[in-house]
Image (cartoon, rainbow, N blue to C red):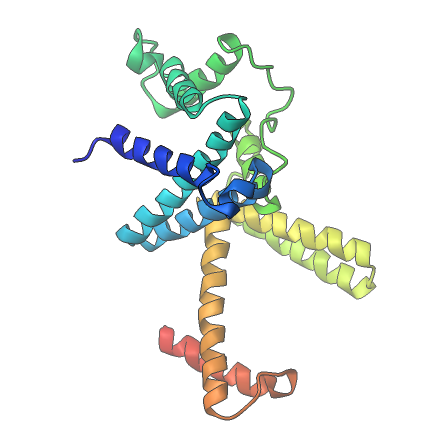
Length: 263
């Protein structure tokens, strides 16, 4: 097996070349702000690859995540803020510091729950981070709303604010569905938006309760819809029909055919 250090040094050298005056014009123009959205995009693509179980694809997407992270770290190194080595050393130091049961004395953290509690305690008592005023503190506001809802719900559940039975969560989804229907009947835009938001939130809660990541589930649904819609477009073209509102009935029939063939 190759030395990971040698492999990372090769990536570092390639990055330095790309950002040099003799390097790539596009790469030289980028800033941490201009590529920050790429970090989220590549993370999602990596999640999708992991869900597919495709080894070569997973390897490629993990590489892309390393790419964006290294790219951004090297930009800050060029600015003199900190070096790539500082980032890696800081990470290693934190992992060692927050795992005393592995790298230090026996702390009694012999279960996953105790490890998490120890991790959070070290952040406050050793690293001096501000204690949380709320159980949901620490969830980044920069997260996409779906992910933020999921993580806030997980934090609240850890604090004991959670349903006891799946049936109760389903009941909440039905309740929010009816409230959304009622808001639509009233035709008040602001109320509709609020109730649809509540419905989304209840569905995210249901996914969490069933131990399903809603972002992954939604990503799979989008991929499935895209695949089926492209097939509908293809079959419509073969029939000489335009993909349009006027031909919805024909498209809907083809959609059901595609769905049935996949099942």
